[in-house]
Length: 176
Image 1 (tube, rainbow, N blue to C red):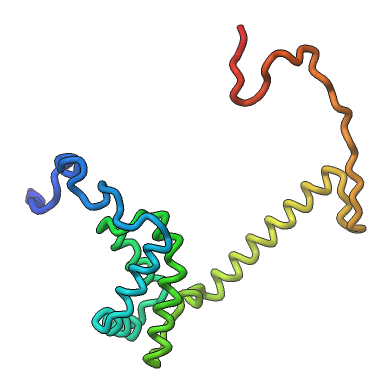
Image 2 (cartoon, helix red, strand yellow; image 1 turned 120 degrees about the vertical axis):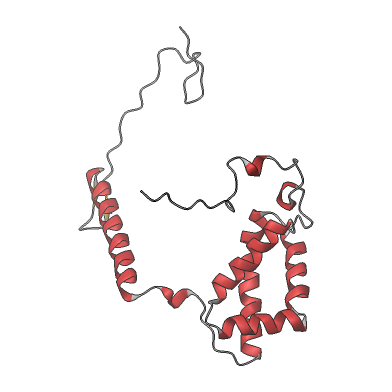
């Protein structure tokens, strides 16, 4: 029986735990803490001639604008430029600036929205429609008339607790 070949280039289990705490860029405080600082960083970086040419090349290869923007911002998160939440908030600005670069150089690009095919769009719209019907049926069970668009909600009597001094709620302590 032939033994399988071993791959000795693979990382050892637990290898990621051997680096000193703070040795990785994402374990340090980010360089830019606010969205405004990150926007300034991206505008100056993407506005250079070298980076603009690279963006144009990538757009000509068929990579969508939204994917390129996500790659750029996630790379900056891994380098410790900004945190992931700032990256999510700055992504629309990156997308618009990449579109501006593509439009100014007359490059046809995909925005990323057209990647949904007709089957996926139909499935998503069917799911939204069924969710809406379910919500309407639940409202109908609560006393809201769907046909007349009238609300006939029946009020339930308010029951006062016998001992108001006892705490009641999700985070209250149990008294034994």
